Length: 315
Length: 260
Image (cartoon, rainbow over all chains, first blue to last red; front, side, top):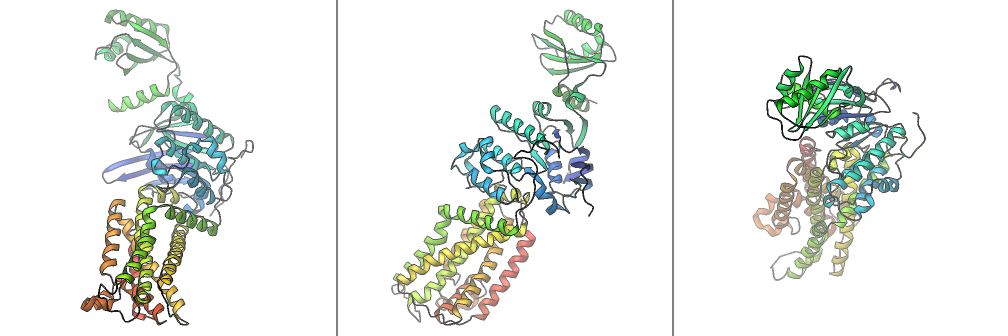
């Protein structure tokens, strides 16, 4: 077995395919995770995120393609890999009658150099769980315990599956701070999420996944940057008629993309010239709609995601 | 790795297997003792069976060759092994699977053999506790075992083989059925074997059915314990039956047990 070089990526997935019966969960997915970074795997429910993560953790054997984690095969070299990674499951993961701190102490004792349990209990507010058995903890409390169990072994690499699902806003911010601190300490983090804000605020690298494939990759900045194109956000006072996106696209010409964000707002991406803004304004007057706001804006990841998956839904 | 040294600076590694097994055993024991229903199964029912059997032996018309307490106590000890190694283990493991504990531990440095050793350790610790309580009650009722020089090692051999047989069957059950179904099935099997499995009462009291019963692991463990503690003799056919059940159970558990 060759010694893993520190330059090897933390995770390298090439052409991964996973099927359950007739359902294709992962369809030729490839991605690379550099060490010391926070990588977000962003996608809707059912996009194949959890299956991909569980393949990295050695729970599932790739049906096609290859997966290397810290240079190791997660199935064949699982015993070498497991002590080096931290895993947060999407749900569950304790005895039904155990107390939160007791469970964390148990997992800590399975590792050689664990993080002091008291520190994690305090940082993640687990002391509030007291003597309550696991099965009666709230969803957010179970999530925080799950995160603590993933971190307690001082891993090089952590996989966290939907870390803040079910958490209240304060706990979500605590979790983001903690993950950022981990990166500062040299830990590589791979997280799945369907919260765009989470990916945008936390991740160095984002892989947008839909239908089991990576459809876009880059830093949040790269993904949202417009490259010589203007992005205009139009919000109106009354809901648009159904034909509005098509009519606006016709008014603006070939090279323009119009995405409906909700009933009262549209996103326009087109050539970065002053006339685009003027044309949108003229279209509003012609249609008799009253703009509430008309802004030249940086695209958000949400816009990117909408445009990407929107294109796929209407080819 | 760069960055300041913090409590989270990577320092991965597994604890030594011996420590992992010890921790696993300790946690499982602590949770079992905390669980009222499990305690009922482990201590209260066997003690009631012993006291009820001794007090009611005459009115039930049991024809025992010796003092009732001397015949019944080894059978109740066998019952205790069955309740812990089969019923408690199956139910607990079923819910461990349901709550994702087995998956969680499957992603930790604890290897499967460590999990298994931890469970066996917990079974033996709990069974030791059961023997102390049941033995004390029996002595209070006038139990006078006659194990001779071989009775004790034969008892230990019976308990270990019985634990292996019942635990592997319990794991096969818990690995196949849903948690609720495991709960129901494990309790039902326990009740049936308690009533008609030749475990507490010697097979001779079942009339003609006694010969058929000897292939059951419950009767085999009861026979081994009675022979060892009543007059210090070895029930070789009982030990053989337990060995076969342990082998069958291990194959079934190995094939059908699912960690998720």
